[in-house]
Image (cartoon, rainbow, N blue to C red):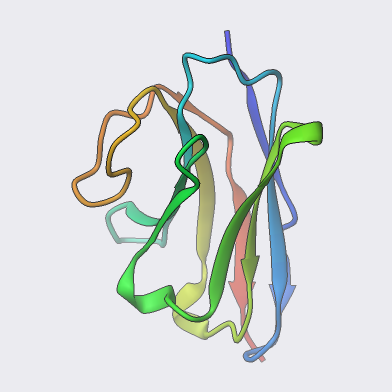
Length: 125
C-alpha cells in the first residue's frame, strides 16, 4: 500500500517562502500523479496543484499561479511544492495525494486513492 508523508510546513511571514515535500514509500506504474490540496478552518478542501509524471503535466489553481511550483525528484520518490510570495490566505493544512489517472489532475479532479496526514502552513506576521 502506498504511503505518503508530507513535511516542510511551518510559520512564515507574508511574502516568505516554504517548500513542502511529499515522500512516497514507492511509486509504482499504477500511480500516475500527485496532487496537493489544502483545507483552511471552516472551508472546503481545495485542489492547489498537481503533476502527472510521464506527461510532465502540471496544473495550478488560479490563486497560486506564478507563486507555487510543483516538481518531482524521481530518485527520491518525492514531489515538492515550492511556495513563494506567501499570503495569509494560503494558511491551511496541506495534503498530498496519489492518483492512478493520467489525464487532467485538478480540473476536473479525478479520484485520489492515497492521502498523506497533512502539514500545517501558517502565514502570519
